[in-house]
Image 1 (spheres, one colour):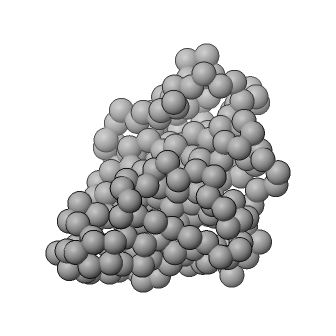
Image 2 (cartoon, one colour; image 1 turned 90 degrees about the vertical axis):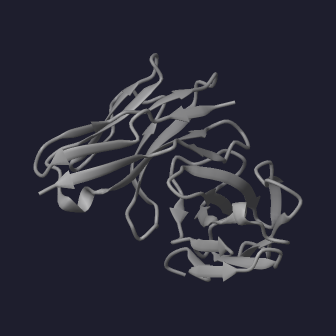
Length: 116
Length: 118
């Protein structure tokens, strides 16, 4: 079974600085998708960025980028120029690309604090 | 609709009562998912629907939990004889799927129902 591990329960960053959130996963599959979701106090999960395992190039979405290391099964999220609105819970997630594999598995989350 | 809608937003119930939680997915989204999030924890998968069938209900924690879906529309999660450990936020998500292989898109989530069993 696949697992997703986020080893940092909490992280803190100064406004305008850069922070990296860690995520590792375990799978025997070769084709899958990885995601980072943000959950602000409103509770609604928002998709931040996604990565397809067969793509070597790291995904980037504005101030958000990932460092995808497939061999190491690592998928970290880098937030540049941190803003107060980035404060939230961040969840790393895994989804199989095999036939019928629709379920997404989430890590335990990392709470990010942004200091003014 | 424009987004995934869940109701009620908050529900307080007495231990032993039954509750129904509702999810209205994005129109046209064939797949629907229920997750449970206990306080300060990650998301725990409960059940997945493709259309109105549930190919994966492996996450339902006990036979007190059941869910149904009408066509590719509304889903209801029912918890019978609620217990205090059922207190959590119940999140619903939907996605557009074709065939039997997941697309690379992520889910669209609702804002959840916070259930408190007293």
